[in-house]
Image 1 (tube, helix red, strand yellow):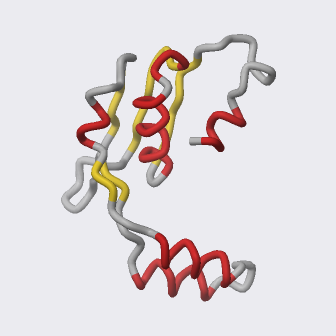
Image 2 (cartoon, helix red, strand yellow):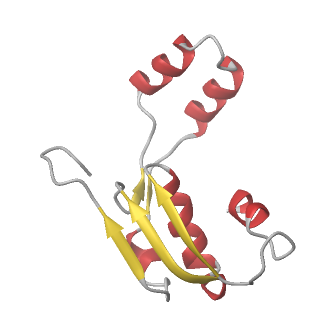
Image 3 (cartoon, helix red, strand yellow):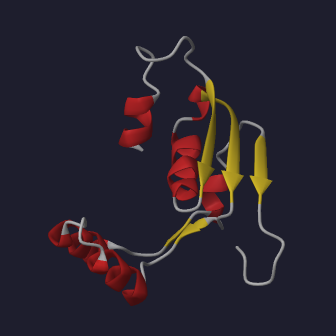
Length: 109
């Protein structure tokens, strides 16, 4: 949430309210921001993500570590600290209009 707040701080925008769009894993952060700072949002657009923050898989860790540009200590720390967080109850606190865009193919979120 602090990252979103830093990017959209009032000193960087012309307005104190804005529409926030988030995709994939960023949607969990956007939902958290929307539930904790509802006065800041005019609207929320969530793309391709369920109302939960999932645990990172071992496959995710292996893909990240295979990238030569990855800081392995940082990736390992993120993996070690990840935990599933259910956001369905937080959705009740979102007061702005919400547009949810999701995939229609089998297996999509």
